[in-house]
Length: 234
Image (cartoon, rainbow, N blue to C red; front, side, top):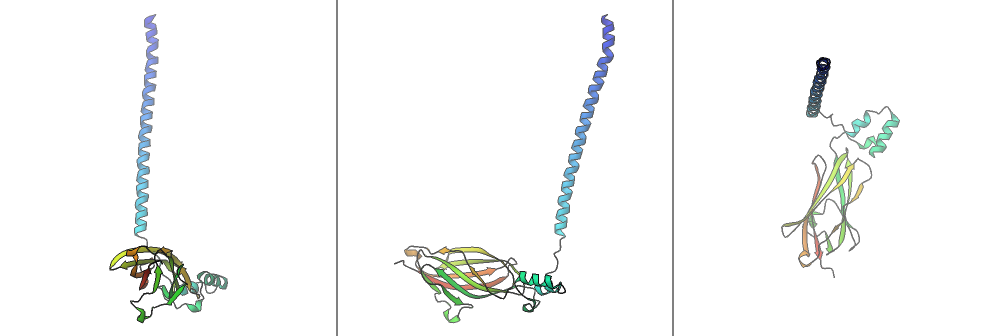
């Protein structure tokens, strides 16, 4: 009886072992296949990155067109031409085909709680060079106001930096973004960020400053040197 049972159990155990081995082999093959797929996906990602980098490295921007050329591309379509002129703030006869934008500054002014708004035409009178442009009391809030025109083409990313010195030492520097401007017949008016004059005995006196405007192509459109004075707040 026992031998018979052992004889019957033998084939069943063998089949169970074969099934277990087959499942383990299939599981191993599946894991290997998954790993291979993952490796291929990583390779694909790397290829995409390389292709992207290659496309970026080989990217050649289109030629810079003047606004006149851009408008003339659709000169036969009156509605589209008028839409472009309205969008750009200019009409075709104002454009001369020049590629590079030009920013022409007309005046600089100051707005303060100390005094009425004061404005000076640009360029500054050479006879005033080295003289004080304006005088403020210590602790005063003020803003510089610029009037300017944009000519020929769109100026992109116009920024300013205002650096201040006293007795040859740099004491302050402010930077800011004005924005992107298209040519138009009417001048732009832009007020810079509000600043506050320092207070105290050491803060009083005459300061020299340099106001500079650049676009995102690092073209300098104006660099203005001026001076101002801070007096006691009586």
